[in-house]
Image 1 (cartoon, one colour):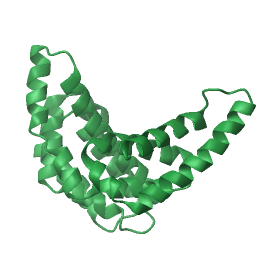
Image 2 (image 1 turned 90 degrees about the vertical axis):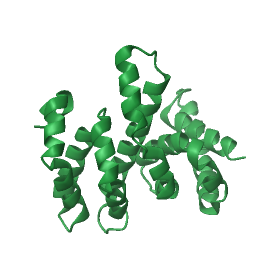
Image 3 (image 1 turned 135 degrees about the vertical axis):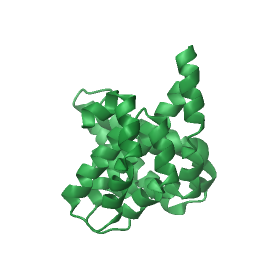
Image 4 (image 1 turned 180 degrees about the vertical axis):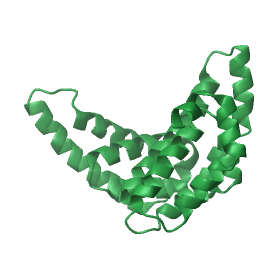
Length: 210
């Protein structure tokens, strides 16, 4: 079903009009086991990616609020990074399409994406801070995804981030940590290593907030 959903627009539209999107949001909004929510989030992500009609319906149904509510539930930490990755992907796919060479098909797609008011909803519901707070998580992989998302949100969240003292402290701590880890990498002969890349992301964000 997931594969059919991802590549067949007719099947995708039928799935949404048949209530599949509502069902997934209900699962995510109600008290279910983590494993069930994980599957629902995976199916939701597949349904939304590269499909502006689904994204529009998702926003109409209060989907962003449902995803935000996961951050207030205990034991859902493993879903946080998946939600952030989904947000990043949805914002990026719209931006990349708008930057691409326009063919007739692309023009039609751009018109469809213009109906999807994702970024205003993200800003209005204060996702700026929901996302940046996750930089305090200990896993480098999580931080990497969050740094990428903060970088994309910067265009819309800059003022919010500038006034966020906790973010400023977190970024300073991350910079110190990654300076040490990157120096260690270089001593081992890895000049463009993983931690050097993360340090670059942290420094770029600090720079933009000045």
